[in-house]
Structures are given as structure tokens and as C-alpha cells.
Image 1 (cartoon, protein in one colour):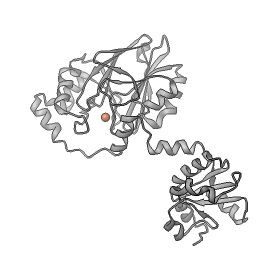
Image 2: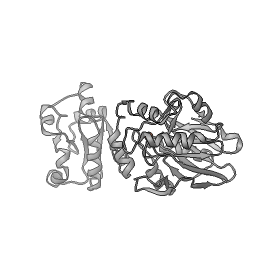
Image 3: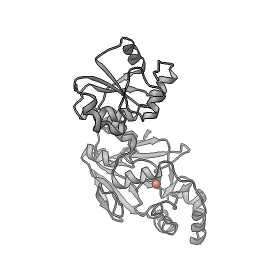
Image 4: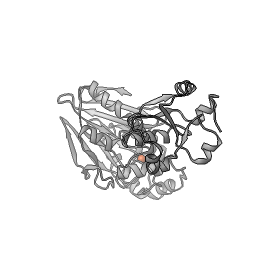
Amino acid sequence: MSKTAGARLMIFEHITTGGCQSYLVGCPDTLCGALIDPEISQIDRYRALATRDGLHIRYVSDTHTHADHFSAAKQLSEILQAPTVMHQASAAPHAGLRLDDDDMLRVGNLRIRAVHTPGHTRDSMCLVVGDRVFTGDTLLIGGTGRTDLPTGDPDQLFDSLFGKLLTLDPGLLVFPAHEYKGRSHSTIGAEIADNPRLQKRERADFTVMMRELNLAAPTHLTEALRTNMTGGKTVDQMLAEAAAEVPFIALSELDLRLRGRPNDLLVLDVREEGAYRAGHIPGARHLPRGQLELRINDEVSDPTLRIVTYCEFGKISTLAAATLRQLGFMRAGALDGGMKAWREDGRPIEV
Ligand SMILES: [Fe+2]
């Protein structure tokens, strides 16, 4: 993360998450701001940075439908009451403000201009703001976005680069959506001169090169496309939301309590039957997650009972505890860790 405050003309934050780059830009006169390509794990950070800079975030923008990381646009739009801004061609139903080529957003005294640059995806756009351009995955430092994922097209990328993006001011600073080597930014001129892919300036050479890249599929491809295209939730998000609703109990604490043979604590093993039979926490009752709602009325009659759920890794048990609390078992919680950790700790096991 860096703050370069673009020579007093722009408040600027650069947030790096692994290889993903997101940006917060703001007008220093009006304190109006916009987020570009936010990533799901950094929601608190973006909000904290905006607060620290005194910025009110008015727009949340994705330069394209990301296939390799999880966009925070929908969640931030809801939290901040600010529209998700995407290109007109985006499939995302949560895109509340869709831009056409050359449309501008007014962010206080800043202007954010969309340049439609299909190729990496059909809905790719670059955003020009003052002395810089946020290139999404259209142009990376020393590279370009791939064109072999859904809606990608090497011919379109050729046109977008050589017919549009690279015709902009060579001095424009380039800030891409991905950078894996720790470089902060580049310029249009430097990329034209040095970017290996941009040396293929004939259409046929360029498209053959792109078609022959033979890249491995990005991790989380299907989940990223599913959630970014539809606004649905990632599995991690569902787990995080459930975890925010339930209390946890430590392995050591549960072990200690069970040694006192409590009659006011129900330990619920929510794994499948085979796993339960192979060894469980002493005294635990078996009620698999898949049958929880169907059988809970027969299994537990006292809604005030303290219940601790556990599973193999501590994830499904969190969902189970959240479900129990929704059902009215207000003292349901989950083990912080799972049977695997319990086993590895050498704690007692009943067969
Ligand atoms: Fe991308």
C-alpha cells in the first residue's frame, strides 16, 4: 500500500493483496472517492483507509468480471450505499451503474473516464483519472491479460491495445489490476517500449502469440466467475458470516469441561456416520449436518441448552451452530478447530 497523493491533485491509495491490486482515488477538495477493483478480503481495509483519508466513497468499480479473485464490489456497494460501476457489457446483476465507452464519472473535481477495452473479457474497461490509467487486466506491467477465459478474444485485445489504450498519452501512469513482482506502476510509453507482448505489432503475430500461451486455469476460476458474475457468495464468505454469528469454544476448554462430566452441555458431532463411528469426542451425540434441521426437534428439546458443534475441520460445524442459533438454540456455539485438531492434540477419543 502506498499513498502518493498525486501532487495534491488526487488522494490515492494503492492496496496490494497477493497479486491483486486495488485502488482508492479521491478528490482532495470535496473528499469524494471511488474504489477500483476491490477484493473481498480487504473490505475492512478499504473502509478504514477511506476513513483515515476523510473520504466518502461514492463509487465502487470493477474494471471487468474477474475470473481469478473475488470482487468485493457487491458487498461494498451494499455497505457504502454506493453503486457498483461496470461496463455496459457486464453480466453482473449488481452493477447499478453501467458505463459506455468514454462515459465519465464525476468524483468531486476528479473525472474518471471509461475506455472500453474488450479482449481480456468482453466487459473490460480502463479508467483514466488525471495523470494515470487503471488498466484492469487489459494491460499489465510487462504483460497483458490472457484471452482464453470466458468472453476473452485476442483480436479484440489487439484492437483495444493498439487502437485505443496505447494511443493515450505516453506519460500516463499505468496501474494494473494484477502485479506479481512488486512493481508499483509503469507508464504507457514504457510499456510500448519494453512490454514483450506489445512488440508483436501485427495482428496475426499478436493473436497467434495469445492463442499459444497455453496458461493453466486460475485457481478458484469457477467460484470467482460464479460469484463475480452473479453477486452470489463465496464459500469463505458464507463461513465468515456464520462465524460472525456464533461463539466458539477452545479445544482445551471443552476438554477440561468434559472431564467434569457436565450435564448441561451437549456436544454435537455433525460429521457423517462413518467418521463418528471411527472415533469421536467422548459423550458427543451424532447428528449429521445434512439432517440437522430434520432431526433437531427429536434430538434436543431444551432450547436453553448449551450446545457445542464440531466437525472434522471446524467449518461445517460453524454453519451448523449458526443454523441452530437461527432455530432458537441461543446458546449454540462451535468448537474452535475440529476433530482433526482434537486428534492431533492427543485429546481423549471415544469409539
Ligand atoms: Fe481478470
